[in-house]
Amino acid sequence: MSNKVFICGVNTANLPKYTALEQAELMRKIKQGDENAKQQFIFGNMRLVLSVVQKFLARHGNADDLFQVGCVGLIKAIDNFDVSLNVKFSTYAVPMIMGEIRRFLRDNNAVRVSRSLRDIAYRALQSRERLTSTLQREPNLEEIAQDLNEPYREVVCALDAISEPMSLSEPIYSDDQDVLELGEHIADTYDTDEKWLDKVTIKDALEALDEREKRIILLRYYVGKTQVEVSDEVGISQAQVSRLEKTALKTVKKFFM
Image (cartoon, rainbow, N blue to C red; front, side, top):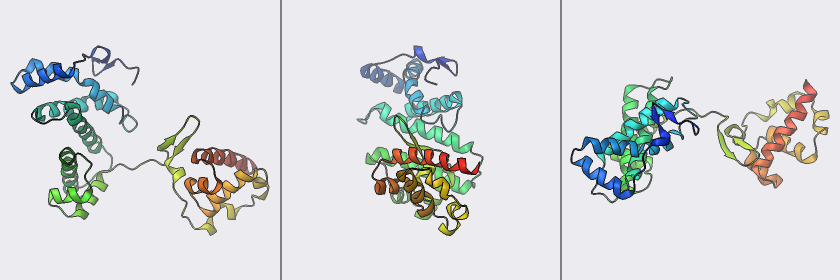
């Protein structure tokens, strides 16, 4: 998307840029009903939509769809923005653009949620945006439940119902050489008596590893520790544990091919 110039027929390379004073003047005209000023303001803030869209492309690859939905959020932000508040427009608009995109992604989710839960969840998200603006921080779930006058348990269940499952391949850390995935961060709680290290004879395979690789494999797959725990015990970074574990597993697998 970073190389894409046209999106939804809009040449993003030619989007106008306005100073803070120019934006304030346009907003003043918008509040007086100037539709031409509103169109100028929308085009002047489409880069804001693009920056938000990039955060969601991994979950929904169609940039055109997300951009259109994000523009709806931008227009809603313009219509509802209170010029009397000492708040930058971008600070107010970004949560609304993100909220609009999130609603789109939830409504197009293959997993169906009951209407009652979905209604509570949508109200909870609106409450979160409202309270974030008022409190100048992210509200907790108890504050949201109190704001909605709904039981805390109902709010938690509703938000959980519309949340998207995360892939075990979801990247949660990266450096110049390694990418750490969510699955590598989760402990193996399966009964150790049933682990594959107890089911096959791998003495020869383990002997092919150096002492550090062998220790990492035993801690990860026999003891069931996470990579974070192994890194603390072995005294190296989590990224190094990830890299050495992958190398060691490749070596071990060769003995069973």
